[in-house]
Image (cartoon, rainbow, N blue to C red; front, side, top):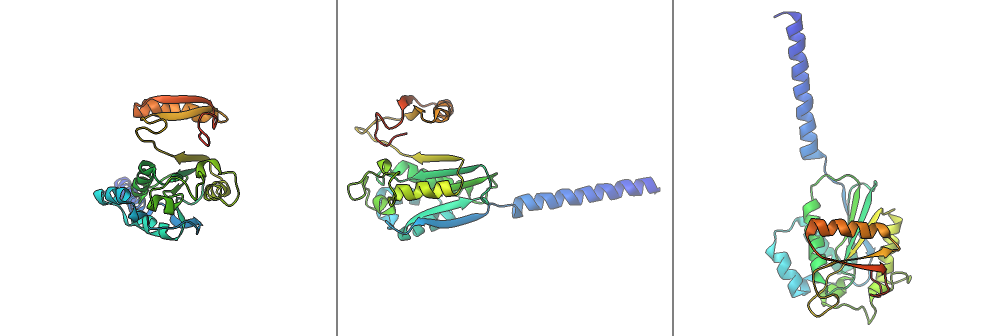
Length: 228
C-alpha cells in the first residue's frame, strides 16, 4: 500500500470518528437546559383536584417533567424554562382564568413535547397562572378578573408580566379558551390590529395553519375588557 492510500484511509477514518462523535453529542448530550422556578408563592393548590384536568392528564402518558410541574403548583405559580436564557425568548401563559382548561392542558402537553428536545433560544411556560383557580375550576380570584388587572402591582397576572419582562421576552402569549354560550362561544382565533399589528398578522398565519375562523378587533380591550 503506497503512502497516498494510507493517507486517504487515515483521513476517512478520522472523518468517520468525527461524524460519530458529532452524532453522539447531538443525540445524547446536546439537550435543553431545564429549570423550574416560581413566579410567586401565592395561590398555590393541588390542580389534580380539578376532575376534568386530572382525567385529561391520566389519558396521556406525561413525562416526569410535566408531572413535576403539576406537583409544584401546590406551592405557587410555577414556571419552567427550556434553554439557557438566550434569544429569542418565548413566554407562554395559561390559566389566567382557572376554569378555562384547554390551554392549561395544552401547556402541559407542550412541556412533554419540549422535554429532551433541542431548541434554539429560550422558552418559558406557565401552565397554571393561579393554581387555586384551576384546582377549584373558578374564573375569578376573590371576585377579581386577573385578565384586566395585569397592570396592577401585587396581582398574580402583574407578577407574571414582571417576570416575563425581566427575562427579556421577545414573544409573550397568554392563552384562553371559550365554551358554548360564552363569549365568543365558538372556535375562532381572536386578534386586534392595535396596539400590536404584528399579532394581527400572526393570527392570520394561524388561521391558515389551523384552518380556523378569525375574529378581528381594531383596538385591544375595547370589545372585550382585558382582551388582546
